Image (tube, rainbow, N blue to C red; front, side, top):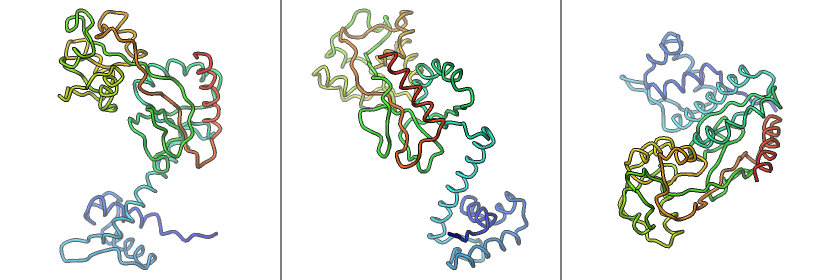
Length: 293
């Protein structure tokens, strides 16, 4: 079915006007004259047969409805740009666009990727950090690494690994392990992506969590360094803290065994066909998981 679309230049002018707020700045960004920008905007308004602008003597402003449309245009232009970049990077369409969690990606996934590359040299994996779930419909990803206890809505998943955590600190701060109750009186370090991790850990020990806030960090390597320097006690995954524990930089803060508070999984949207690159990656990861079970 034929779908009449507004001219791309006119759409770019509308988006730029919404973002920049000035026809003069739009003309500079698009390398056009102001009169050319004005013609593009008038053409767009005529084709859409809807008022897009509030005109006064000082400025050309968008109507509220036009601002909403400009947001849609911006999203579409971003997708076109991302699609063109992906095609340029891998014209054979053998690319996998993967959103990863940085610490899991660095310590668990990346060390295993050379084997995947040897097996599938025609597949390129482009990885970008995302710390929280997102809408696959508006982000340029085929799949993502997810952590948590709840499913990611609208996706299918392949479980990868349970995460065992334990409280760790420097030997100077805690020379000998203390009880979970005694731990409530010590400074606790928090990871921003898991704000309730300490609460859940204390609940597994049947101890009321402390109410006092502690210092928070956005990355596991940073919080591990803070704990190693005596700033407080960090609740760290075993697979991330192994080197620090082996070197004696971090020691267990309690005699309690590690606790599982969540699971890592590969997730992908269930409303579209699975690309060939993703299918190959999924099959390989399933083999990795089976081999390490």
